[in-house]
Length: 187
View 1: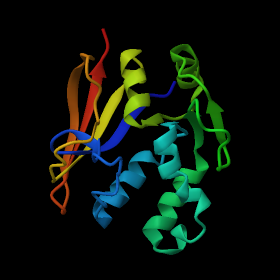
View 2 (view 1 turned 60 degrees about the vertical axis):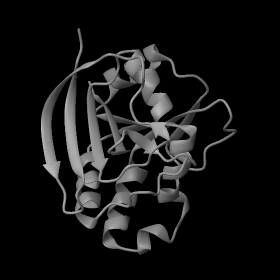
View 3 (view 1 turned 45 degrees about the vertical axis):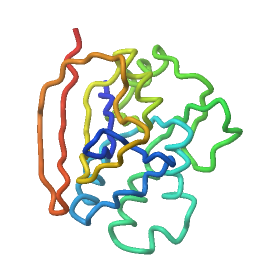
């Protein structure tokens, strides 16, 4: 059975997107990029909301991206190997291989995917992650706290959800960012 990992960049004031919906406010250093690639390498399935999927699909749809550096090539390879499930009521089709489109987030279906998984799953996108938190499906939070304040935007963590967490790991990066890994303590 795989664990469901919520993995996201977050500003120091708690936002994963700025007030314009952009996630390009914090490009990772090489050190951080390598760390993230190794973190997601064992994951066999990525769960995405539409906007996060569209942001990440470039790792397969832009043929020039992997040619920019060895780091980009490695991340692109890792991303392409995983299965993807995209939750969207507005997307007509997906643009990447190994990708399934679902109209609704069904907790029982996600639990079945977790139970059948040969590796961990990641979930990306604040709204879809909120559904998973509300359903008690998230096993770990992997937050990359970036050294900046956005002032406004989309919160990285859901409101109205209480979860007790246990700190499992932490790391400081050369660009001033901090990685925090917490286990969600399920009742």
